[in-house]
Length: 389
Ligand SMILES: [Zn+2]
Image (cartoon, rainbow, N blue to C red; front, side, top):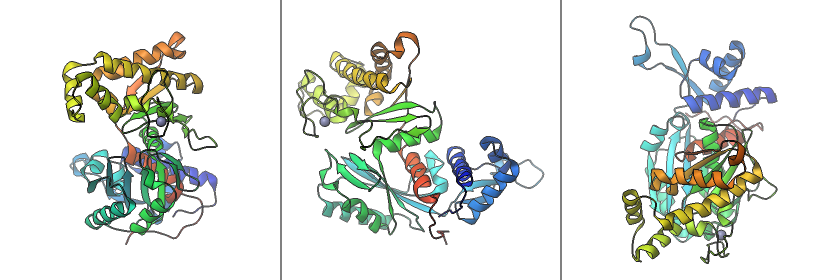
């Protein structure tokens, strides 16, 4: 939707977009200061983005305005351009409809509008639920429908190559049909890649890190010098499917002994049920128990297994920052401390340097909008103007 022949100009536009996404509304002077562009260039970039319908000028909130005088004008991401977002999960599908401006505010994203439904087992039932969700959400001009997708996703062909826990999504058809449901082209991002892009755009840590998420599956993503690491196959970061000697659990991928079978939500719950001799215990029972009792040996063993695999990945890629998200670190504050200690013990950086291990909230929507900015909103090939009316 934004067109300019110059690569430099595109880079400036992307920089401005990310700045506004990370900080929310700021003045033109602040854009120039924070982006390192001259005042004239920053102003030109802003004017072109306003013309393209990506930005708008708004009054500063009354609280920041001096008693005398006019409110200063701030640049904001568009409050009319809407992005439908579909987060496909193994247990649940979350559907949102946010404006670009909402994307800059985690509180606005969390507040909604939002629809959730338990993930059906067939495409037919899924699209029935999705259509109902779409009808309940606000609509507007949408340059793309953003999706986060579990499993192995070929970003080049927008095709799910393998999804151990959601096999009916295999192929291209489901993703394309989601796009048609929202009358917009689909922009799909692998779910852990979306988390890593969100973490990167949020700009809290360094520009190189390994992110590991513990959810219904266990996955990783590597960011090196501000970029998501990608190999010739779309498998980078699949550490949840690393086999562990002595682990006899069967994984959804078909192999036996994967890390995921120990430290995914289902894996943790299975261990909890066995050790507590409570075959009907729920995830909430497990969370409550760990919150009250801390890390018992069954959990420490699983954390140690995760640490061994993560340390192997750190030794291989050579980064010194580990970001953990999801269910495992949320169980108890001591989990991250123990994971940190055990990774330090196994990673070579722990012998002479300092590994930074930190938890972070899942910033998936942030990551999806960042990906859409690069692939759709600010892409170099021309697209028709999508100014919201
Ligand atoms: Zn597996």
